[in-house]
Length: 65
Image (cartoon, rainbow, N blue to C red; front, side):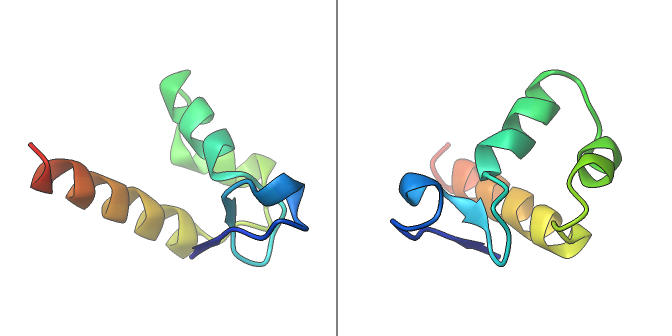
């Protein structure tokens, strides 16, 4: 779903198979944009990737609460 490679965007966490940083999704959501709007702007990211990342992040946050 996500990957980190020093040769891709200086090792920034990106959606696998793309050059789209995960931080971009976070920034979109923080700005009040929808997941659909993000996916329209970054068609190389699959909905399943974005949803899986968000689920994983939320589960991690819940386990640390």
